[in-house]
Image (cartoon, rainbow, N blue to C red; front, side, top):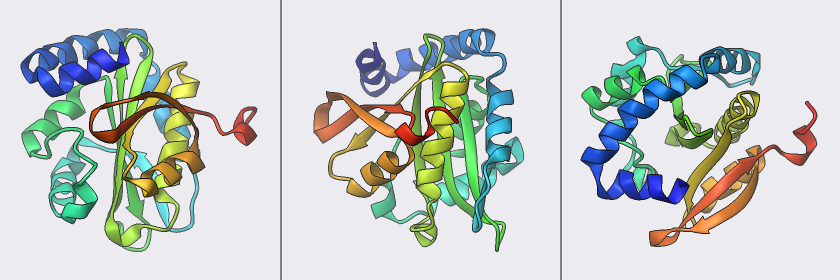
Length: 203
């Protein structure tokens, strides 16, 4: 099922758009407490240099600027959706697509963007990007970890696709979660299941 969803997204965008709308409605019905869990878990996370929060509608223009101003190297393996404002607004209104942000406490500027694309069958895909100037502060690891906590609290299985040529992302994901390889996809991408870190199973 997961491989089929990926195939539809990349090969049949029109059909994928229809699936996305229907899925959003069904996901909202099944996981009505999803956003409550998100707010609870993000609020409980504390770090010295940054904070994590749900992305509000008022943030979308800032997100658009943030994404389109990232270095080309940062976007090589990050293309989960178009970055135009129209698409960002559409995704934000979808109850199955949770958009979140990392904010630099010293400047109140965007330090990163991450999301969970949920499916009513009990699955979610995670993706993230950290601002080039804010790397090395544990932001990516935090994004992986809190996203796994959100999915676990809602009894949703979390997955991600990571390029095997992107070791920094693999390391960050492995620090925040326990990775289980599910399948090797085209273009050297890995489909991984994100499980709790062994030391955090009972928190």
